[in-house]
Image 1 (cartoon, rainbow, N blue to C red):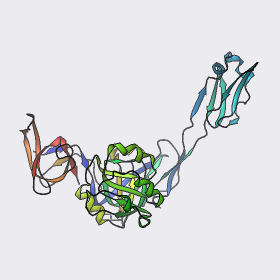
Image 2 (image 1 turned 90 degrees about the vertical axis):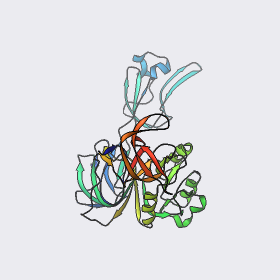
Image 3 (image 1 turned 60 degrees about the vertical axis):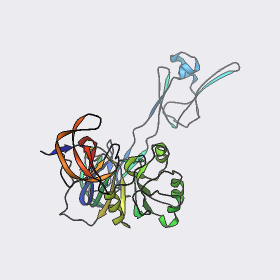
Image 4 (image 1 turned 90 degrees about the horizontal axis):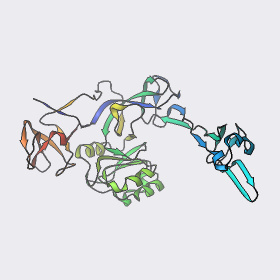
Amino acid sequence: MSQIVSSQTIVKPMVKIRRERSLPYGGEIAVRIGQQVTPLQVVVRGASPQGVYIIPAAEMLGVPADDLPKYMVAEEGAAVTRGMALAMRSRMLNKKRVIAPVDGVLYSINHGCLILQQPSETIDVRAMLHGYVTQMVSNRGVIIETTGSLVQVMWSSGHEGFGRLRTVVPEPGDFLRPEHVTMEARGSILVGGRLEDSSILEKAGENLVRGFIVGSVPAGIVSVLERFSIPVFVTEGFGDRPMSDPIFELLRQSEGREACLINSSGGDRDHGRPEIVIPLPANSNVPVPGRSVQTLAVGQIVRILRAPHAGRVGRVVAVHNRSRTLPIGMRIPGVDVALPGGEIVFVPYLNLDLVG
């Protein structure tokens, strides 16, 4: 009897990839079906919803709500700038003012309150892929199709990017260090085993590095990484884990090829994890990775998710359909996993992530 695994990390050297690039609201589609697109090409453009500020001006001035219009120094419909006086009350030496907290338009004066409407901001959604537009998603976005290598990762710093892959460490557990970030790395996405020194990102900005792909980062530097505009993609998660061998080998074999670092976009719930896409020439005979239920079988590559072997990758050598007793006394089904070096360990199904 096969056993179901709910967690899977897609690592495919050649696969057909379809991804949605869209806004959460309506916009203007800037491409057509069948059009070839590049990563920086805008595919949909829209205006962000306008923010509204409500200012209790009558209360701030200490006047009745109905009397507020007498104290206004700005008119309804007027453009205002941050710091500009909107209403003012003078009494002897005491002067009170209501100041605009943001740029915008004085939309209305209503029941003693001033309603400011901020100007909308234009939002551009870029393709972030080399590929072809195959479908429109209402007036919100498009579906782009490409062929290439695909790697799902555990976490990203929230930014996207693209550049040529450059592996700067010989082993998947080696640290990315400042000396790896040189002028030769300009325009590249650097691949390393682990990243613990966030100051590397400052140097990366000076040398125009396009991004980083690493196995793990300490949880303590996450907030720092998120402040930089350079994308950081983490394949294994937080802590002190090397990059898994299958992912490291795929990236190393792709040396010099352009990679796209993509976060989930629009309503693409099926592919919600950050992804590394390495486009290849179109090939209609490659499969599209499905989101069907995955089952464990002998020979599959898995990642162990919890201690004492958290982060290690191995191959399933036996599937146990009957429960086994763990050292803590619990009985639970699982598999035997052969780790690099020959050690075989029993791992419960819930502690596994299928890689492939």
